[in-house]
Image (cartoon, protein in one colour):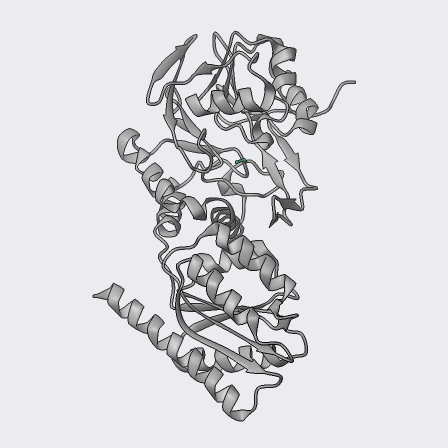
Length: 404
Ligand code: FEO
């Protein structure tokens, strides 16, 4: 069958040959309502090179886009920057179809490819910081370990100064547009931040180190990630965003995440919110009945405080709260202060103790904790207000401390 997919020209020698996935709703727990792209790039030259492949069931879209420029069999080399399945799902099929001379991956990437597909796959190690000539084209490899897997690496295409950055600087955004200047600025920032929060936040120190690559090589003409648009205008914008997020430059902001069973924890939330606002703090309240994990992670990214409310269900956390906290624990945001609160009925209020334990494991400094039986009365709501005010004062002190 002949497929209709066409390559998109990036430069005279580079073509985008990836896939657009409008159907993706979730990426390992991260809601992706705007879908995504799996980017792959064809470099033309004496020995054509393919940088990354795509998720398994988009193989025909990839090969069709390549075929709109050259016969896929002409490709001599594949560079695999990262072995997660959204970028290597069809690697074996593509190798079989085009029979390249060499496949390159980082040292850890070779290991990962072998563990996914078997030791018989022929893959060469792309030595860290090495430059190789493939025909008349020059490439430099830089390992970017734990951004966000041990195998992750960048490939710099020296002839055109394009950095193929794999997951870094990417976003889950399906679109017909391939370049940053074709996409609304607000959407770019929101989706890039959401990607950082949900994928890269646990590895913020490694990301900060990786951004140092621009000191070594200078800022390239383009950054071409494996998800979302290629950055070709004002690259300092995405680089400065990454520095902001990697160093967790928070705002004068508190995030309250809660669920409620019979309305009591909701009442406590509203009183805490008022206390925070009384100190001039910006408050985002996210009821778990209508908030997904990815949106919560995005809000954590620039929040100075995380306050979590849970009702008790059989003396345990409410299921939505347990789910959210398990997710946030994995993302391990640094430097938060916080509070645990909630209502309990006939039980002993075990949910709040569990929340304290989880927040403690996350190294959140717990400023206050409050469990109220059944329905909070006037004095109980005043206690909640005071918790909000106390956290608000701490946020203000933190901000003043940063300004000194
Ligand atoms: Fe886009 Fe880590 O895969």
